[in-house]
Length: 299
Ligand SMILES: C[S@@+](CC[C@H](N)C(=O)[O-])C[C@H]1O[C@@H](n2cnc3c(N)ncnc32)[C@H](O)[C@@H]1O
Image 1 (tube, rainbow, N blue to C red):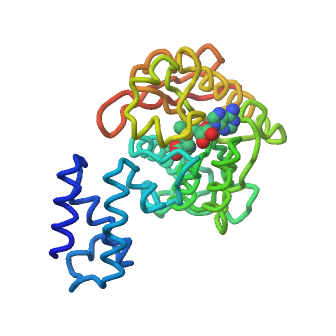
Image 2 (cartoon, helix red, strand yellow):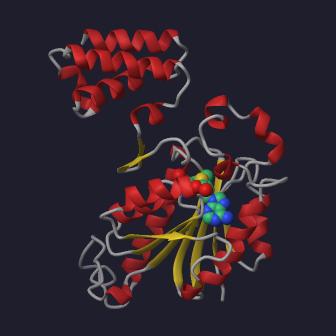
Image 3 (cartoon, protein in one colour):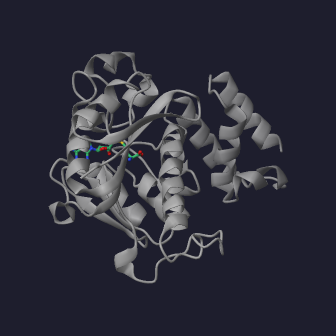
């Protein structure tokens, strides 16, 4: 496909790190086909070509691919993104996988479940809504984490907490027609009506130390919202709020999973230990770097 090669060459010449993958994505958007069918296109129309040129130029001007096309992929789902909302990152996907694994284990050991008796290997959805696990996401941004959980594990009650008006606009749009309840509150005070009843809290909070701001890549600094990035002087200010709110919300035995910077593999778990959590563990992301902690609320 000549247009794919041409767009790839332009992006490569402009220093884009994955030029073929990004060119395929851009062409897929303008031709309105799935990315894996781009090579099968016979050609593009003149208006489609003009649109491809425009999007390629925007990308070459430094806008993130996700802002250029208005979408970001996360695990099995896609969300709308743009100025004012954090672009979901692949490093967060492993934390969501951990949460899903725990829920599957819970299903397998639940009293009376077919899985517990070794009869089925697919997680059953409880018939009674009151029996569905309660999951709260703190600092939900676009809603990618909550929506991925909803897509991959039907039968959850999900609350997505966010306090940025710009992010809330995306969150509300992305969660329309989903089981996710949007909560427009500060995560420090969120959802008092759920105190001591929640099964799982999950969060990817802002965790970058203020002093690291200048060293951030311009694609991050210029396009992700500051409130989604910075976590005070040591980067852990919002992580401490997440620990306190998780301690309030979780039932005894409930679990928390919280993302952190790759040099906070000791300091972030220490925050949760100091807040009273047990069974602290730190986990690597897909690139092998310390990325998220998990812990249990003893009650
Ligand atoms: C790193 S982003 C993560 C967004 C999303 N969970 C994801 O992984 O793509 C952190 C989010 O927390 C939100 N946030 C920061 N402080 C908050 C607070 N005090 N209360 C509620 N949300 C907050 C930010 O607006 C931002 O959307």
